[in-house]
Length: 95
Image (tube, rainbow, N blue to C red; front, side, top):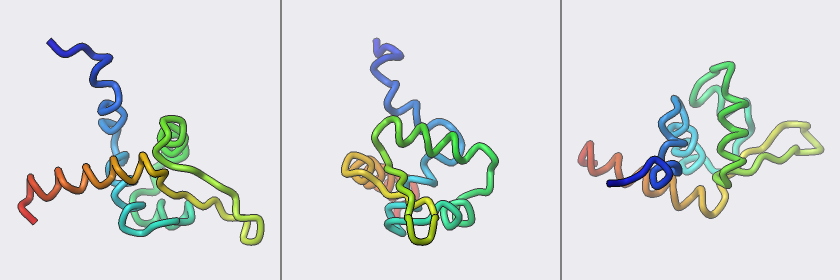
């Protein structure tokens, strides 16, 4: 039997919009936080979701000192996970 601890990495993505965030960043590369909100969701909990993804090593959030925008990008681990998520999408929807 698989324990809950064995699945905890995958459980991160059960929360709404987590997969959409990862796929958005995979498709768009480094993005401003506002572009991510506009492209995925203006959900008021988005900052918490981004913080959780950063805590788990999926993304980095950096302040652009010139524009004062928060820039978000996938880490290498995040890119690998996002590519697997895209593969699941292709398997399920056949494209």
